[in-house]
Length: 148
Image (cartoon, rainbow, N blue to C red; front, side, top):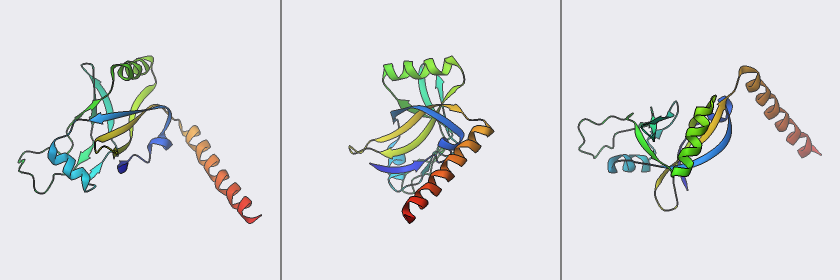
């Protein structure tokens, strides 16, 4: 598994309850561009349209050797999930308060581009402070244990 891009702010801004692996529909030039690590999912999000999931606002740089003259690096890309997973995702969105966020973009062992997305609920400012306190305490605890 070769990680291309990660959304580091996802765990800070959201409380992730479920993680789902989805495939992405890409063109050949986009796959070649991702192989040289020119993609980013920072600030991207997932929407549902006409019974399909779409990755929006993700950036994949134009491959230098491609001949596509009118290439849009931040176009919407279709996500491939099973019907069971889609029903689970759409049900949690309609339930309210939940959203789908991309977490990591990577190549699987078979060479397919995959996206790990999470069903998450947004954190409030107090929750973010609490997670910072927990992280700092765990670091201090590890240091104390290391000294002894």
